[in-house]
Length: 313
Ligand code: NDP
Image: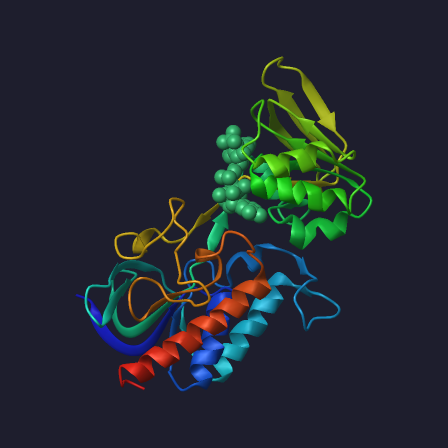
């Protein structure tokens, strides 16, 4: 049997968006309840150094930064619990969310901050060297490979954009494309093709990322000829797409075909009154900690205004 708990504001997810929503909601007296999800702190807990978040002039480790976010949310009284939201029912004015099959939350407002997960190739070496030369975010980690040779896998807009970004920092960028064409928009493809220090490896697959403690190479197979090539690189970027963690909402919330939640432009409002979406669950373009945090603030402010409108707070 599940217990029922009533709250004014439920926040699902604990990345920069969720914690920022919590800080604002708690300071506004909404007594927010947060469920962290299976990866408390979100994607930043699997990165190392974060140098582009304002307010940390010397940079900070991703996990440590998320501890700071959490401490700040707790300071104002957010009830933070480890737990996974597995089902929702957004039929009525009160929104129902089930957590770990044991708890049923009835919330006047819900802030969805469930984020997105990077897709990976699935190689054991990729997992072992994650954070030690392997990264899924060129904007976050490209700087650490200044004047070095790196590779990036993928052929969509993200891969093309990140290859271009890396080409300005790194000495040489190998772009590993599995087919003989790219999915990226023509303009982005042209930019990549016209950048002298980007070499595109068509019809190519990564067999292994090399290195004991840090990346020092990669083995690439040409799928047409079977030929194998060793790249001397120190950074390996994976840009093969992200999956927004929004599956449990799909019967209720309007999303695009990839599962990113659609919000009313300039707000965090979804198609369901009282349900707001923030961070990477609704942003496939910027995907930065600072933009996620900004949208988390919007979610809390929108929730607060909605509660005032319906006379709850
Ligand atoms: P996409 O899903 O568009 O592209 C993923 C790419 O990764 C594809 O080229 C795919 O290859 C390749 N890929 C997938 N799995 C593997 C694998 N196992 N091994 C090798 N390659 C693989 O993801 P994006 O992140 O690029 O873009 C997501 C969305 O966001 C798109 O709609 C995009 O247009 C949009 N976007 C827009 C931007 C902008 O407007 N500035 C910037 C960034 C993204 P294949 O083509 O063979 O399937």
